[in-house]
Image (cartoon, rainbow, N blue to C red):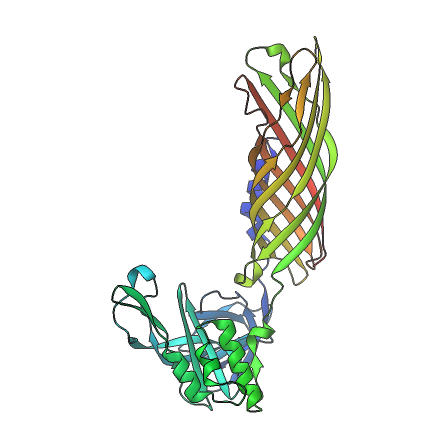
Amino acid sequence: MKKILPIILVSILSINCFSQIIYEKGYYINNADQKVNCLIKNKDWKNNPIEFEYKLSENDDSKKLGRQSVKEFGIYNRSRYISSTVDIDRSNDDVNNLSSERNPTFEKEELFLKVLVEGRANLYLYKQRNLVRFFYSKDDSKIDQLVYKSYLSNNRVAENNAFKSQLWSNLKCQKFSFIDISKINHDKIELVNLFVVYNQCVNSEFVNFEEKDKKDLFNLTFRPRINSSSLSIENFASKSSSTDFDRSMDLGMGIEAEFIMPFNNGKWSVIIEPTYLHYKSEKELKTQDVVTDYKSIELPIGIRHYFFINTNSKIFINGSYSFNFAGDSKIVFESIRELDIAYSTNLGFGMGYKYKDKVGVELRYQTPRELLIEYGQWNSDFNKISMIFGYSIF
């Protein structure tokens, strides 16, 4: 059992060697207005990129292009970025580092802006770590930032919401009033909805890239498993009471809730998986019999990372911290009182495979678990390795 953890760790370190990078059909437009169809490495950028990686065909070497070399690039049916020189305010939005200046401080920069809505009125996003700025244009006009700034006024946090006046001046429509605009927050979802409604109002053809790029960000999976478990106990005061229980094979069931992080192409997720465990074993010692009856609700909470092989298959690794609630569980000796099994925690490491985000399998190792923590003269190691099968219902 002790050899399992290093095997998993070595597999985790080497898994990058055979996982493939996904390139998707896309294009770029160079500075001579030539459109070049290609394959673009889809990094599902959390922050706006400064360059992108592409291939002209599957067998070609990858190359990179930056903002100065192209007017725009995109991945079909997923995303579009345009290169534009704009005035941007990079004032600090951290509450602890706000300035007392109400007006934005603009600097001219060439950036890749992400297109959120494209139509008669266009909405763009620039994001770099904690800095979030929205831009807009209308009827092929210059691209301007929607002004929003937090600042200090009389030692209190105030807001410059000039973006609302900009919206009202440029996006007047019978479907919304000034009061509606005044309630708009500096928020991506609300702004996208407003620009969609405006383009519908003026009968303009438009593309909502946020709708196109919507992903399934939650999975619920039934996870039956085969557990291979063992328990050893040691009594420091009486070696005759120490023993190793036989390894047993038993069935378990878990339900996994997986929350996909909305960046990096869905490669990272948070997992929570309530699981039922029942381990029962009996051992005949020289002077007495001892029986273990261990029932536990396990609650591992962890992080998972995916490595894409192709559009249907992916390999994953995960690590978790597990809370284990023992309930009415005991180790019973004939000659002494019962030993209550206590609440415990431990770590888990797993690696597995998923097909079409529907079915999967995982091998998971859990570090030894101390069950007799309430008894100073006793020590125990509960070990478990599981083969887990998964079926996602959504």
